[in-house]
Image 1 (cartoon, helix red, strand yellow):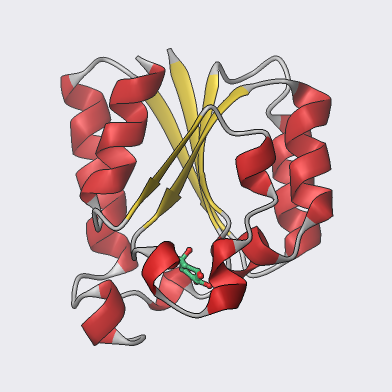
Image 2 (cartoon, protein in one colour; image 1 turned 135 degrees about the horizontal axis):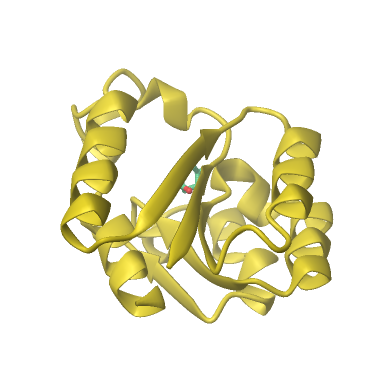
Length: 139
Ligand code: DQA
């Protein structure tokens, strides 16, 4: 099993950004957590973070034929990006959507998710553990 984990804008600021919502652990902590878990489960994993919508679209396109599953936290692009939704549909790779916070309990605009229209499953509000549960689902 080869899994691509994609994190969208501002998730590289974990630990600094809004700690009351996202916690004090950093993006490097998140990478280590996912990498260790995948080692344990014998999963080949690649992590990708970008603040650019087009870069995320290109990464998804390049995943075609290379990955069996995608775990994606599109961050703010969740609520706006038809392009990311279309890229996932184009490659047809099994996908789980993850949000660290409980998006349903926040501002109304965070209730809309374009990626959810494609994702097999959406996991919200479990903090970093959500990524591990997404990997479990793909396995
Ligand atoms: C987020 C929730 C989004 O609404 C927000 O724009 C983010 C992070 C989350 O992980 O909880 O940047 O995707």
